[in-house]
Image (tube, rainbow, N blue to C red; front, side, top):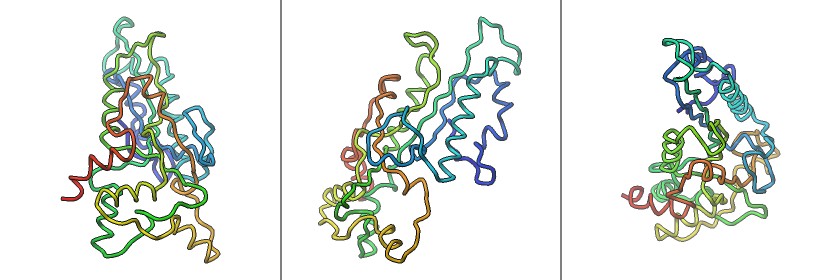
Length: 261
C-alpha cells in the first residue's frame, strides 16, 4: 500500500522514483494499492462524477498525483512485471501483479474530525466557520471517508481473488469516498447537534471571503479549486465493499464517544 504523496522536488511518486526496478524484479509482488486523491478531478461545478470523468485539476500537487497514477498504471501493463529476479518463475506459476489506484476523499477519524474541531473551538472559547455557519449560495461539497472504511476497502481489494467473471482481474481506479458528499457547514452543524451545542452564526468560506475583500487572489490548491460529488459504485461493484459509515452522520456517531472523552 503506497500512501506517500509525490515528492515536491521533482513531482514523482517516491516509491517508483527509488524502487521501480526492485518492484519489477520482485517475484513476491501480488498487489499494489496506490492512494491518490479526489483532488485530481478539479472543479466540476458540484456535479456528480465517477472515475471516468475528466481530470480538471490545475494545482501542482494534484497534477503530480495524476502523473503518479499514470506511472503505476504503466508499470502494471509491463508483461514481465514481477516475473524475473528473485529467481526465475515458470509460466505456470507466474501471477501478474494487480495495481489498483484509490482516489481518496478527505480523511476523518479519531482526533481528526468535525467533532474534534468543535471541541477545540469550545476549549478556546471561540467559533470558526469550519464547524458551522450558514450555507453559501453555491454549496461547496466535500468528499470524505472515515479511516475505518479506507482500511476495509484496502483489505477487501488486497484479499480479493485475482480472477473475475471476465477472466484475470486488472487493476482499476476507484473513488474511495462515502455516499454523501456534503458542505463543511452541514457536517459542522451535525457535530454541534451531537454535542448538544447551538449552531454557529458565522458564514462559510471565510478564507476566500476575506481574501476577496482584501483584493487578494486565492492561491489554487487541491482543497479550494474543486467542487464535485464523487460516486463510489465501482468499488462496491468490483469488490463487494460495504461502508461502515455510509454518510458523515454515521461516522460522527461512531467517533462521538472517542472524541468527547
